[in-house]
Each structure stands twice: as C-alpha cells, then as structure tokens.
Image (cartoon, rainbow, N blue to C red):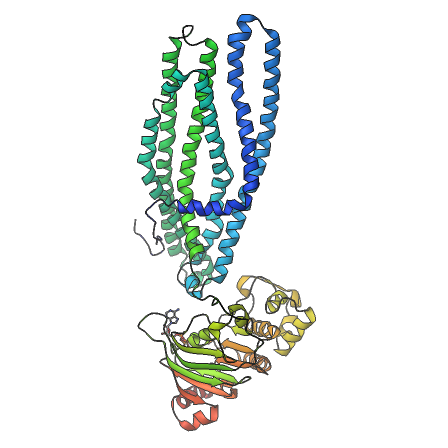
Length: 592
Ligand SMILES: Nc1ncnc2c1ncn2[C@@H]1O[C@H](COP(=O)(O)OP(=O)(O)OP(=O)(O)O)[C@@H](O)[C@H]1O
Ligand SMILES: [Mg+2]
C-alpha cells in the first residue's frame, strides 16, 4: 500500500525505559495512604481466600475418618465468616481502586494540559493538533486500565502467588518443587516476545495518532474539502490511514496473545505432572486431603501467574503511551520568566527597540539591527511587503520570542526582566485571525476581563461600534456562537475582538490587520471602532487599510528586516520613496 503524507510516524524510543514508571509513581505518591489501605484490604481478602482448600484438606483427612462433627461445624463457621470478609473486601477494593486510578489520571491530564497552555507557538505550528489531542485524551485514558486494574491486580496477584506458595510448601514441599519445574520455560517465552511486543505497541500508538491527526485535520478543513469537491480523495486517504491502524492493531494482538496459550499449556502440563507424581504416593507420603488441597492451590497459583503475564502486556502497551505523555510534559517552553524576574508595574506605554537583531533559525537574520523609540500613546503603522518582518516585530514586543541581539524595552524595562504574565496582561494583541471561543458573544468579550459587568461589556461594544450588529443577532449579547465563530462574518469577528481588547484596557495595543478586503460599510465601522480603541494607548498596527495608515502618528516601512523609511504620512509622501510608491499603487487601485 502506498504510504501517504499523513502516515508520518513519530520517532520511537528504543530502550524500555523504567524511568517512566518512576515518574508515574510520582503521580501516585500523593495517594499513598489510600493505596496502602487498599493493599491491606487485598492482603486480608487473599489470605481469607486461601483458607478454603486448607479446610477441605482438614475435612477429608480429619473430619471424615474420625467422624468429628464438632470440628466440621467449627471449620464451616470459620469458612462462612471468611467468605463474608472476602465479599466485603472485593467490593471495597473495586470502588477504592477505580477511584484511586481516576484521581491519578485526572492529575496527569491536568499537568499535561497546564503544560500545553505554556508551550510556545512553534510547538503547535510544528505538529498536527490531532496528535496533541490524542495525548491529552486517549493516551491518558489508556493508562486507566493499567492504573485501575493492572497495578492493583498485580500487587494482589503477587500476594496470591506468595501466599499460595507458602501454603503449598507448608502442605508438601516436594510436590511444590515439581509444580515449579516448568517455570523457567515461561520466563523464556516472555523474554522472546518482549521486544517484538514493545515495538508492535509503539507502532500501534503511532498509527492511532496518525489516524487521529488526519480526522482532526479533515474536520478543520471541511469547508475547503467541499469547495474543491475533494471528498473522494479524502476518503481514500482516510481508508489508507485507517487500514494502517487496523494492521498495526492486528500485529500487536497476535504477539500479545502468544503469551496466554504458553502459560495455559504450562499450567496444564504441571497439573498433570502433579497427578502423576502424587497419585502414586497417596497413602504413602501424601494424604487424599493433601492431594485435593494441593491441586486447588496449583490452580490458585497459575491464575495469578497468567494475570501477571497479562499485566506485563498492558505495561508494554502503556509504555508506548507514557513515552508520548512524558515527552509532551518534558517539552520546554522557550520563553520563561527569568529567575529574578519582577512584576512589570502599571505601564505608560513607551516602547524602545535597541539594535534588535532576530532570527528564527540560525544563520538567517529576519530582523537586522532595528532601533526605534515610541512615546506613550503614539500610534504606529507597520507597512511593507509580505515576509518583510512586520509580524516578527510585534512577536518580539509581547515576547513570544527573545531577541538574539539588542533589547526590547517597555517603559525602560527590558521585557526579559519582567514576568510574562505582568507583561502580556498589559498588552492587547489582536491577531489576523480573530479567535472566537464557543459560548455567547458576551463570554467572548469578557475574555478580555473576566470580572467585568454586563453593562461594561455593552459599553465597550458601543464604543467600538459592535453594539449595532450584536443586538440584531438572534439573542443579542446572549447569542450562542460555536468554536471559531463560524456563524459570524470576519468583520463581525474583528469587531468582537476590538470590544474584547477595549474591555481589557491594555496600555499597548497590537493589531495584525487581516488583509482580506471587506465591504466599505464594515470597513467604515471597523475604522470608527479602531479609532475609539486607539485613544490614549500606544498602538502597533500592521496596516493594510489606507485609512488606518494615514491617521497614524508614525509609519515604518519595513523591508528585509529593516526599517527603511519612518515618519508620518505627509513626510513619507514628500520623500517620494517606497512608501510613496505603495501609497500610489493602493490609491490608484481604489480609484480604479
Ligand atoms: N516561526 C517561524 N519560523 C521560521 N521562520 C519564520 C517564522 N515565522 C516567520 N518566519 C520567516 O520570517 C520572515 C518574516 O516573517 P513575518 O511573519 O514577520 O513577515 P510579515 O512582514 O509579517 O509578512 P506578512 O505581511 O505576509 O504577514 C519570513 O521570511 C518568514 O518566512
Ligand atoms: Mg505578518
């Protein structure tokens, strides 16, 4: 089958890494008191469960020959009590363990989500969002099995093996030795399939992730797909990716189920061996009761061994997922608070770039020695060809990246010396593609200042001229909008983002204007809204609309990572340089 570009696997770790489990243990640690309690209960239940065969041995060897009915009543009563104890313990165990497992998973989910919130833009730019999603949701859920059932069952099974073994030795050491004869063969089988199994499950998690990424992308891009009538092609790709997943699943399953028949066969052969050895000695060295009790214990012995084998399987599966989860948690945010970072006090809005050079990748400067000074309250328009470095300049201002040389100062504070939170909370950034969250219009405006009142929201919307269109929506301010605000026009989305920014009341405003042309009426609205928004603030606007540019206090013409012209509209026109040309071409376009 042809591999397609969506079937891209993430790199696999080669060695089985126990450190993942040490880290998993860190998540369990806060719950160790509860874990200890559960373990005690399990120990109690297991010990009580072991008494059964021993009582039947006493019944056969002592009660029947001696007709000792008072002994029978005694052991029956003890047996009955032990059954009640087991029943109660089982119930407690199931509830307590499920709860414990889910609590640990909730903590893990939180730590991965919190971490994701702080990762740099580049992290999200460089990988499909579907692959990130699957880590937070599915991979963590897969661990649920390991934690809720696997881990606790393992401990319970280990108890069982040890206790059963103790009973067996106590009853008959010689038979016990016979029953262990085939154990080394079991270890051999485990060793052989271990490596293959691990690889198979890593492959499985990869294919699962690819499928998820493709589905996610298809849903996000559904409009483009339908516009270009690409449904059939997408289905083909989907089938390929989905089939890869099915194959990897089957090959993992085949390896996984090798273990079980192995254990099963060994247990049957061992039991036969015990019959063979013991029956010939019944009455000589071994009593009938001992034989019957011993055979029960043998069964008790192999059940947990099979379970431990199964646990080993889920451990291997989980390792593949844990790898991905911890990889995400270990991803270092590029930009973090300096150790001695201070809170940026309430700012005026003065901005300085001091000989700033910056590159995204080594060897290719995107900004070259850029310097400028902006007084508080000034509006700046950045213009210039695509790829010139305009967005890069504003990215440095909110410290989404750090400069390579020079410094960015706000009110004379180097942005690297203050906390990110105090810096960014004083800046209003409006990106080209306004993001609307699912919720009501009012929720979306409140995003700028969570504790604002409804009256404040409406006032803000009125100032930026968003009020008129909002009250004409079905439920006015309480109209429900879906993720991305797809039921709104792009002009309307932008007006909402203006209201959001105004409510937040930042001293520095950054706007990466959308290039898309909008109708003149909306344009006029946006323009009025923007003018209101800019009052009393320092603003950086990557401008495409002439009206915005003309009114700015300063205009920077950026080309090739440098400011090649600076001044207000009139001085730049008089200069008859690049800006003049740009203005002429746009102006002519408008006239045409
Ligand atoms: N995350 C990134 N990693 C590597 N290179 C990047 C990254 N972002 C931008 N660049 C490069 O940096 C240069 C400047 O990009 P920038 O986004 O600042 O341009 P711009 O002036 O905003 O252009 P436009 O008007 O098209 O938005 C471009 O050559 C671009 O390819
Ligand atoms: Mg840009």
